[in-house]
Image 1 (tube, rainbow, N blue to C red):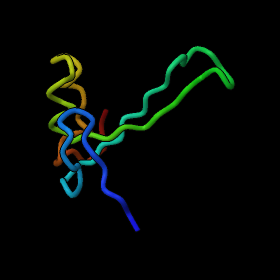
Image 2 (image 1 turned 120 degrees about the vertical axis):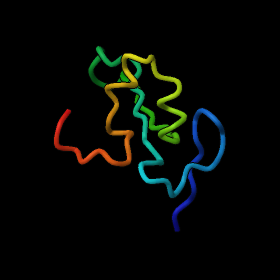
Image 3 (image 1 turned 90 degrees about the vertical axis):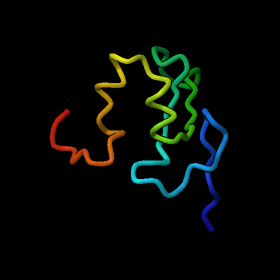
Image 4 (image 1 turned 45 degrees about the vertical axis):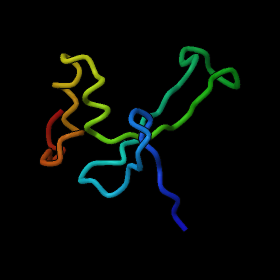
Length: 73
């Protein structure tokens, strides 16, 4: 059985969209190898994530576009 996921930004269910739920991987202490490093996965609507990115970064996040074919980065 699959449980629904909640958007980390708006708190609503993030299921069934063309590119969401998006998984956001957070790595704390990423420069520290081994057991001191921490990792957690959060979820979001593509629209919520893009709205909170800096405009220079949001324009590069084409993976959040429903019509992106994945050929170019």
